[in-house]
Length: 97
Image (cartoon, rainbow, N blue to C red; front, top):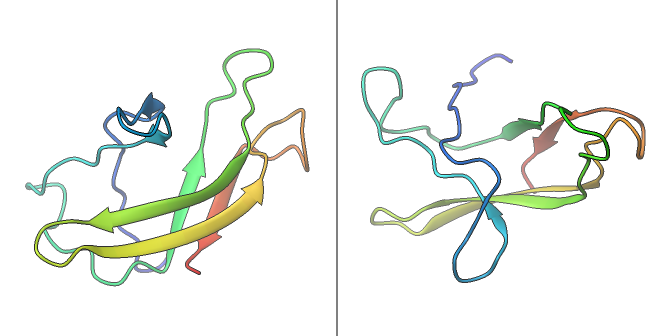
């Protein structure tokens, strides 16, 4: 994807303590991760489909930058990343709303 920056998630699938919603904690900036990602245009999400019935419905992804700006980007999906649901795809590229 041109202009993309791969940022692996630190705790994919964990639940946020306050809401119970799945969250992903991104790593802090360092040599392999730039401090500024700029304006996010899209995100790619996938799972490994390791277990039977491992699909899940994805409403949306919200990326929040809390350091000073409280900036937030929303990427709607409203689909199942699952081999046994929807179109059978386990990877989605989501454009910003």
